[in-house]
Length: 443
View: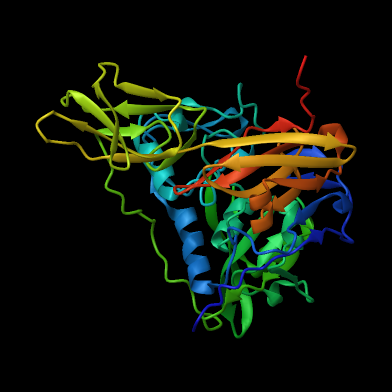
């Protein structure tokens, strides 16, 4: 069956008959927010980067299984939410739960599995040294430097490249309402959502054509997991939490009713880990030109560290005894670093990307004009609260990128911040979260 790659474009102002008091982003950021004040905007022109496309149910379930079953073992303690930790040297399954919206480090959308796992393999990486709930990050409902949440994980499984917060899910153009809100209406890959939580139907068991067991793909307070309930238990949970059933309309269903996903055990991603060197963010990580790029070196037998941009030698330095090589103010580009002995013998390389981005804002009344330029592709912008609760997603179009600015109507001038997300070769990078205040220049 041939899948359509038609790109969908839309402008949606969200309206709903559900209660207007809502919990934002997996229920942890409490904002009194009217559904009429949040929106997802696209002007209708062809987008530079299509953020979703048709996908088969088999691929959706495979993506869910990988995120919930990926096997990794922390070398040191990893920060968790609520001041807890994942213990060192204890095997784990699933991407860690951490609301990394303040950083833009969602595994699956912003950061690849490979970058996350190679960071976990680096004993000095930011996964171990940084707790983004603490200064200078001051995030909420978070801990680990990389992670996923309920909505980002469900949307990743559906092939969606933007980690929309839960309160936006019902309004997206690939999500339909379901007339009969009951356990017996469930289908594989359906979405269950409230304004503060989102998860996906992963498997259904039947007895005489009646659903008897429901298996879901869902975030927990530790990791993303696959969990099972009897139909009655799930119906009770549904009623207690006021869930609403939605159906993605971009999924091509190929599995016959009652057929199960062909998954078992854990997912071991085939990575040939580099034990010679790695960036502090992992392999194939993305940095800004304003970042210092730190390479951690584990093999001190090689006397030199070489850095290339394409075929051009950027620097060749003596291998530092500290085991850390720091590069400051690197220009934008894709880089390769390796160790060498001067006689043609080289270690295995690591790769990373540096993106240059510039953003500014002008505010007049409730109109916010965000100007931007970058060595990467401008993808989307958000208006948010200071803590990262999104009011508006604005998905970039060709004309937006060519023009170099967008205008957004701001629904909350009392707490308006913004950032722009840029798509690079290895992942996304976000501009710093900035207040929606025009900067005055001159004398």
